[in-house]
Image (cartoon, rainbow, N blue to C red; front, side, top):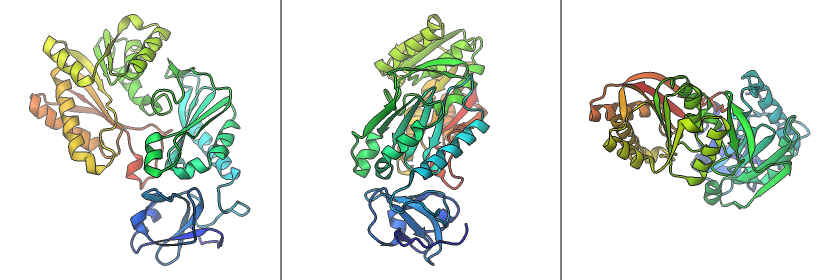
Length: 409
């Protein structure tokens, strides 16, 4: 990064000795224990200047008063653009970031006639910390995960609403993050036309999506490529979509020519939407929906001698951090072992993790341990991550949060 430009109205955050190296490599977070001193009195959402122990400017960042991640860098480098406001980010910042994101998604072929749902902003991966935007056809669903981002809510919503092709914007905050960072989880707004349910297409499969209605922004765009892989393996097979939510893997399997499909989830609203989705795609007669905890459903299938040729396991986040890894790995191993008991000979199993703490090597370790317990040797067919509309900084392990491993028995 280049030389610095003095902007006296910015508070300056000086890092402790040796704490700057991750940031010079591109990691976007400044934790509270990495800070030597703060010059000025920034509020959450203020722009601060981050310098190393020698005073060299690394980047500018958004400040979070109560967060353990005290500052999140903005990717502007050492030179603050002339003419920009100095306390809060100007509209020009959000406009520029959105324009860059649109170009990147277009280069990845998004959106298209076959896929009208995708992630437009992925927080630190697009240098918009605390801001996630998923586009569902003509509706943009915005989720804010930090107090700093909430302070910019109006400017963010206005910038997103100006996008070509977007007729409505709905914005809410992440309740869990609101509790941990101490901001108002009731913050919400909508602009333009936002229908209760939006019809989208993903790899030519139709979904009915309720923006911000069930979980997260209403649809997990990050599993798009894994769902397509699952569907491509389904022809003629008996398939199980465990943790089915609104039926994503089940739909791709059914439309991919599966002999039969069972979708299991414990949420009645999610299964109701899955039923609507199967009807919308003309495959309701080929997908059996079962409401149960996945562990109970697997145990029941094993007891009845029911077997599947292709299984998807997509559990909720089991490890929020590396501190939870040992306990979470026991759960993953047990889940894999249960799945192997109902996996037919020469069957295929896909398991995903939506936690950065459980990466592909961890999944393979759990699969290996389960294979040993069940005496079912496994071979890896594919290791996948989140798709290109979910980018993350190269130095940010935490940004690579989605991993999946597909194995054959």
